[in-house]
Image (cartoon, rainbow, N blue to C red; front, side, top):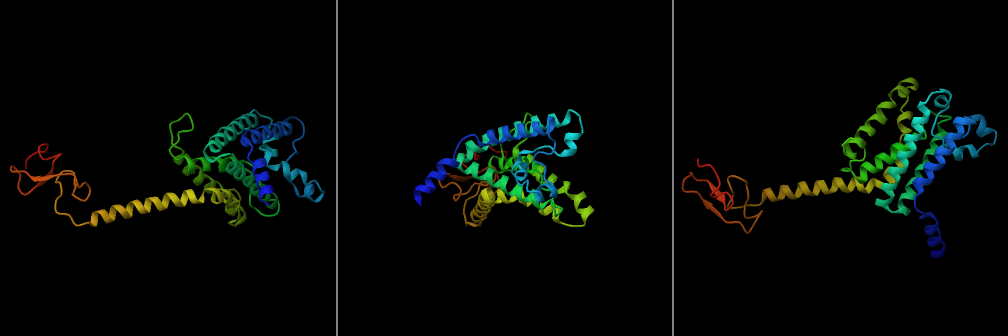
Length: 265
């Protein structure tokens, strides 16, 4: 059993999974633009007719039929942009997480998006392939919140927050149209992978912040005799400091750093 597990790990740990995913997406979408606009498009007729293989291509089909039939240059711009985005973000995440963990995250994301896409044929979930790219950006914002990824010097945590709010706001029209919360529920087919792989990172940050604030609160409750009038340092914050009263000031105590470096009062 252990041998089979190790073999599975070796197979699933291949490098540059994001690059392969981006390449397949590019060629499948290119095929839909130039030859067959129905490839990778899910419809009830296709599934009932036994063309289940189309569901397997769904996650690699970036463009909607309306975008393909528009006949403008915009589909080409979207295709190039999203292909580059998934390659770049995926490469950064793979280097940070390791090939095995990143591949499992990407495959689980593809699996949940495919299930959500099939269910969207019968329920107003509105699960689309673009959600994969959104979730990759959110994953990067969680793992590297201070990274400035784009040309504009904006940290990823702000991009992630803006994207998260936009995804919920974008579903407002569908919710009003169907008078249902299912369009919002459709987001969790992508967010489920984020929670599964990065929930500990999110909770860990909150726990660390809570511990830090608790420690600071406890430090402020410690009884001290000496306290610098300027910086507030005490013998609890720095046991090596020495404290003296200034003869020119009235009942004001200073640490050694500010005893001769303050305005007399």
